[in-house]
View 1 (cartoon, helix red, strand yellow):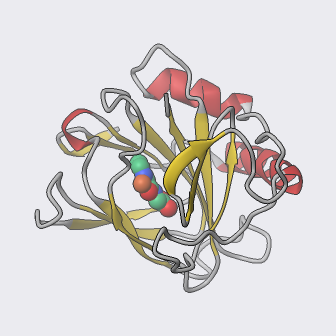
View 2 (cartoon, protein in one colour):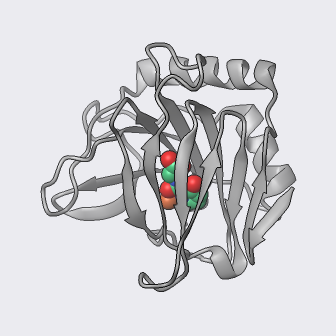
Length: 200
Ligand code: MD6
Ligand code: FE
C-alpha cells in the first residue's frame, strides 16, 4: 500500500487476474438485473459514463439532484446485492467496522470521463470511500478539499484499489481519460469502477 497524500491510499494490483475475472463476472450478472444507464446531471447534461448500483442503496443523479435511492430509476426494482468479495475487501481495507450500504458501478466506454468532483452525498464523512478498478487503465486526477487546490495525476489499472479517507475524504477527484485497449478484461472494451460507500 502507498499513501500518495494524507488520507489517499492506493493498493496497486490488490486483485490478481483471477480475482478480477471473478468479480467482473459477478458484476456483469448483476448488470443483467440492474441495467447500466446513462444518467443526466441535475442541470440536464448527459454524463459520458454509464451507471448502475449494487447494495441496499444506489447513487443516482437526475433533475431532482444527487441522492441515494433504494431502487433502480428505470426498472423500479431494488439494486442487486454487493458481491461478497467486495464486502470482504471493504472489511479488510476500509478501516471501518460497519459494512458498506452502497456500491456505485461506473462503466467507461471509449471517450467517457468523469469531471472533477467530491463524493459528498453521504451522511458521515468519517467513513471512507473505497474504489476498485477493472479493465482499461484510467488517468485519475486527485486534488484537495478546495476546488482550486493543486491536483496530481496518477494511473489506476485493473485490480488497483484506492481509498479516500480522513483528510482526503472530501478531496476533489475525477477521471481525465481512459486508455482504450490497455486491458482485455471488460467485454467490448472499457473500464468499470466500483465505489463502495456508506450512504447513511
Ligand atoms: C473512477 N472514481 O475511478 C471514479 N470516488 O472511475 C471516483 O469517483 C471515486 O475513485 C471516491 C473514491 C474513490 C474514487
Ligand atoms: Fe468519486
